[in-house]
Length: 327
Image (spheres, one colour):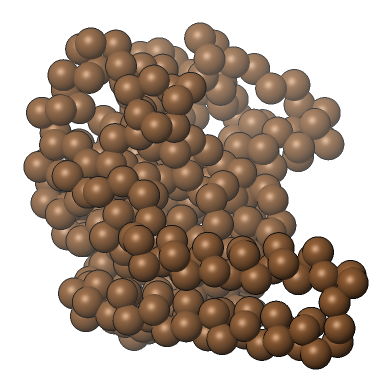
């Protein structure tokens, strides 16, 4: 089991930072010399904090250098500009220190916005989007065009070297239409040819993949982004699959963060599904993780994309911030 909480050293460092800031805010009656002394203390603590974090991360950087990490990017981290900037910088940092990062994304909110703009009423059946022909055209336009290229541009601007793709490119993902239930042009992955991703990642690029593919007849299909990420991770024999969500991870009580499970085995997840602890939208995410591990991925993680630098914390610290699932 991974331990819960931040390491004592980091906690102490952060505490000193916060203490210095608090004292600084309450120093209206202090002399300028005292104010400068507090500022100098903050600076020294901040510098120590940075060095400590780098030192703690070094073993992980060595361990994962050259290894593949597939990140499913979605949720609030795609909508909030500050969170988006943080995720992009984290992805670029991981790539620059030697990890082979592959980013897979959806874009539900953006799709809904553009459906409204073109006058198409979203239609759902049992909670699942019905993707008819006109809707599929908008889905492909938004995911492959606007959303994908926006992420590529942000990564390049942050110092990375991103290449935008969808499942159609290089026959990356072959799909078949889901027929039960019949909800239109929605597909499931039938095969993945990851050679193009190997070539790109091997040359220092960050592949950014929109979850649109096609069937054997060339019909475009919308693929669940979690599922696409899991199958891509399996095809690449990735070290890690990371699903960014809007929840902290798997919890015994969904309303109590203190019940967050830091580490689970596949057998634990099956028991928790049977007991009703893992329920609702968490079930398909956990099943996606389990499938990827069964196909050779070393570990799968569910993390909260709303938490600042959650991606780095999950990969480069002992404790992590979410739930890690292993075989």
